[in-house]
Length: 361
Figure 1 (cartoon, rainbow, N blue to C red):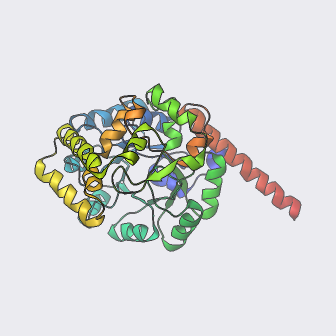
Figure 2: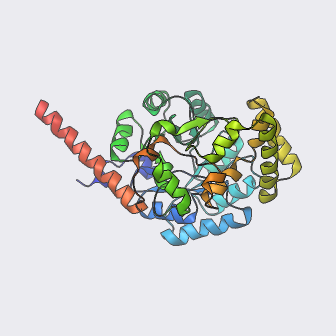
Figure 3: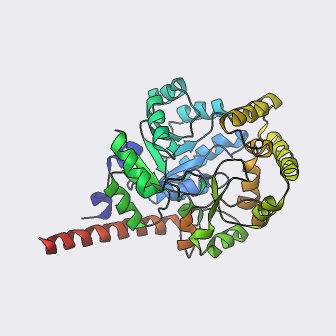
């Protein structure tokens, strides 16, 4: 029996992909090339609409379609970005299979997407957020445990995933700490219908990330040192430590505020965000997480720090979001090699478990 048949789940039918392996929408990383490579390898890729310039979004969507022969893929966005409505319109116009997001869209927006046949698949890091997302209309949900990269919670995947699976009736995708076939089989055992990975796809030969940055990821051999920091935008983010984070740790609150304002202005100019929109984001961040002023300002400009590492190739001047699994990845394989390896290993482990069961009987 082939791995694609034995480990196929209802999620594969929902998303239209052979394998239950999802590539997450990492800012500045998940462009058309990576999404197409993931999709052509049998997985399901999400395009990072949150960091693609507004005038290039449709071109990127069309490029994925062209590179994949019009295979299904997804699009990620945030409701607070200036061109959110443009992304919604494009998703419907181009019949994007799935949309991923945070906690931004309301029931009306989600209803519009679902009426167009689009799978609404937010990412959450807590049971209460999963329940709220489903109440708002999500019909699948990605659950990220604390081992994951970027913004993450404190509950590990081994606790959070079964907790959510037991509490909801929609397909659950497991994220946070997954990188191989053993993880896929474990996630399916918990009751999830697939796995979602960011760091594993970032660390591929198809990601397009500058070699200077990828070298830093490959050098990260200690999972304990891929730690969570609150210094970037006031929210917990798991990152590989570097010179920039060390500088922030040593800086005074005033210096962090000055840096934050400078970067926020750059982000505002790059995205075409109006002053009113920028102030609205700042006020929203202040109400939801009343930390330091610097951290609230930085909530609007953290993407600039990622851009320095992921597109400019200057990891020492930016931040490097990463899951703890980066410490377990030793080489940059293609998406095809990664996905086939995951499926093959999951199938082998599945067969081994069956053999153990037979011997025990």
